[in-house]
Image 1 (cartoon, rainbow, N blue to C red):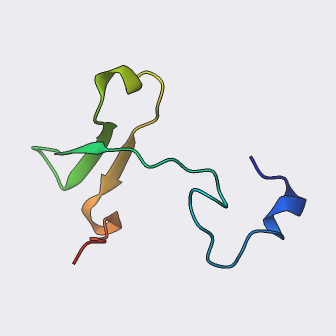
Image 2: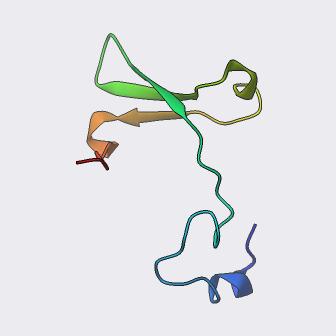
Length: 66
């Protein structure tokens, strides 16, 4: 993780992997049957206990592919 001093060295438009250490992961997206919420889970079941998951309202989603 970055300390306060390290953030000054990160470019304005950082590369997620090279500058921030992020790894891309395939996610499974499940829409709630009762409301407009989504759950994002790791695609691989063995990652479920190791990785966090995301619960988001529909207006928090942005389509990145055209």
